[in-house]
Image (cartoon, rainbow, N blue to C red; front, top):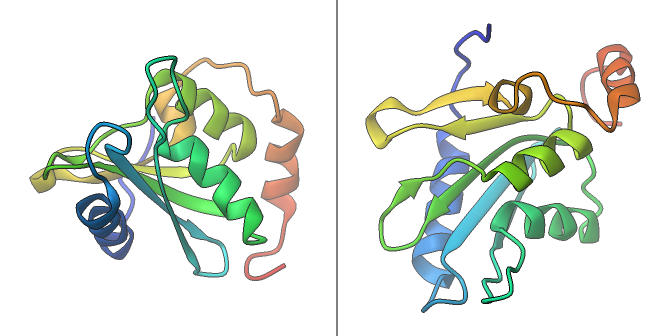
Length: 144
């Protein structure tokens, strides 16, 4: 069972700002923001297409890597048109778990936001990167 963790409201505001200013029409309807271990915030939008297309959380992983950020700690997704925080879909939950097994995810309604681990969102899951769990437990806190 998870314990309630502090909500990163600055991160929620960053995603909401991107959703309000960059999501237009039907192609970009979701924004995501993540905080790296060093405090940097990375943002993204989804790339909707009728054949599928990557969610904002998946685009975020690539955007972060392109900026040299490989140690995401917390992520949140926000919908356009004032929809607020939206939890990651099943595919994103699995990918986020595989890339960042200790990742925290902000979920919930506006008046009841909470932070949970991605593993809490995908219980009893196979962890592709289970070797990373041991590495993260023994990694020193702070910048690498």
